[in-house]
Amino acid sequence: MLVVTTETITGKNFEMLGIVSGNTVRSKNFVKDFGAGMKSIVGGELGSYQKMLAEAREIALQRMVAQAQQMGADAVVNVRFSSSAIVQGAAEIVASGTAVRFI
Image 1 (tube, rainbow, N blue to C red):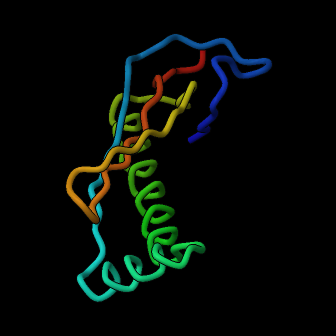
Image 2 (image 1 turned 135 degrees about the horizontal axis):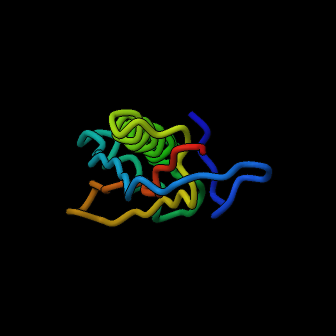
Image 3 (image 1 turned 180 degrees about the horizontal axis):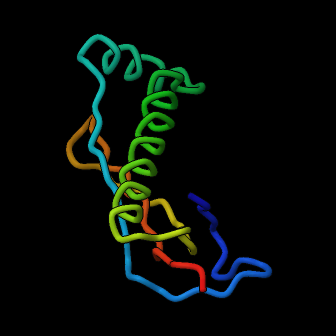
């Protein structure tokens, strides 16, 4: 499945099938939350959260692609990611785009 952030795909004509999205909500365990809290006091990169968010983006992307496949899509265009805090220490990641079929 071709997944792009652009609105068009060079050399391809397509019909739009509809909006597709995938999401996940992730949190770290208490020990890692505590460690990240301590790290935020002195500054620096929060590696455990960075890894968690990278994994969450991949899961959201896979779920979006699965939805597009169910619709018979060949590609997803105009893909975007968004995130929001649900509760302290938990974040939702959403991948969304437009499923298209090549003509």
